[in-house]
Image 1 (cartoon, one colour):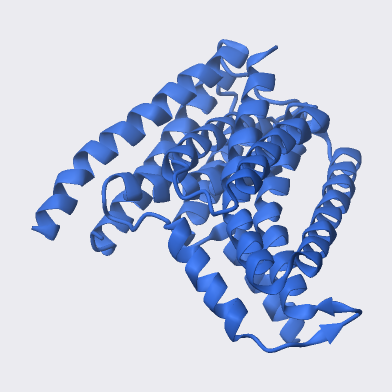
Image 2 (cartoon, rainbow over the protein chains, first blue to last red):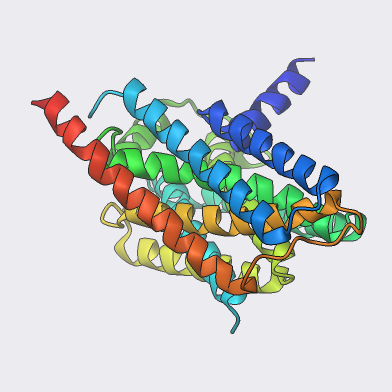
Length: 73
Length: 256
């Protein structure tokens, strides 16, 4: 059990890192993109542009949240 | 060479170089305080384990997953990974996060090595073996991750491995020649560049992979094909530049 917890913790730290908002945001934006592809006939270029804008918004949100949280060194 | 191939070599060389700088610090600290034999056996064992993981994971992912789903999974992971690197590099460049100090890390490792007791297993100084194994393995795992994701999506694990090997050889050669940690390597600048490349390729491939949800399971097509990579790279560069410019005055204000 301890090994499984340690193993899961390692991969969480490795991939998600110290800001879970990035992973959660990217997954949410890509899920929205998947819905667009599956349920509409939106052209590829439109889907790509919308999802890319969503990913940039996730990045900005994460950077601003970290800046507000972190103290300057 | 296509833009994919150039990106693969550039990203893996830089990522490998910067991760090897950190691994080299640990290895040098162990080698100089505890002896080189056990330290180098630890390094060799870690490199062998990393090679096996690269081969197995690369083969399994390539064999089991359809192309679009592979792009979606590894693109998403690359994007999450890249945005973490980019966020930290932006915060460091703006002065909101401490820079990594290689000499400080070296001093801490040396102190730990001197304080540790003598334990011999399999004829090895176990502390030196385990610390150098863990240091190289954990730092190397990030390189393996980047090699596999870039290699699979660009359809050339070999090219990605060559890129990583170039980065490793450059850092190891410099470290062995100087015999001290590479404190003058512009680590944050390199991490900034790698973060930009990972975010660019991650965005490109993850969005291509969304085509797996479409009626024909085929990858989505970016307008302009591979040229879209340059537009994405420019967009990430612009975002990084703007956020550093906006956040740096705030850091200076708070310090004052």
